[in-house]
Length: 210
Image (cartoon, rainbow, N blue to C red; front, side):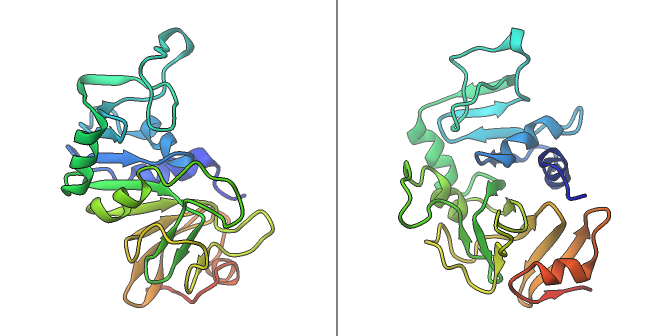
């Protein structure tokens, strides 16, 4: 069985290191907040002006005034802070976000990312994705390995409008974790029950194994 959304988020959470400032994109990446190791000081950042987000709240703890950039209600850890979006984007553009975990529609073997629009479909805008792709010190993408029609999302080159060029370091999918290197995709980990041959078959570019 492929990894569930929660298992993908848990795999990405293994990238977290103490005292990092980490931005979680909308979709699957938001679930990473629920898998921060107990006791690890992590500062989860939201571009609408929060540093220090905690896990999603239980129903009885929901505060409708505390939301992340995806308009989901969140909690705030002790020491967390609130500020305006100009300051928030100043943090991103100034290189003060250690790690961005983003969703994706396509990733190229050179680290290009497309995650904000499909031509011909209505979109609300790019949001903070372009700033995060270029401003964060490291970018990890969380997404399913293939489209709903079975086509590859990991390609030699993206054919959707780009969010950022050469910005992705690692991709965590429902069947594997791959690093992006000068050689292209390099297998870092397989989801239980899946094989390297399957990953290669379902990827639109060569996959290397060290």
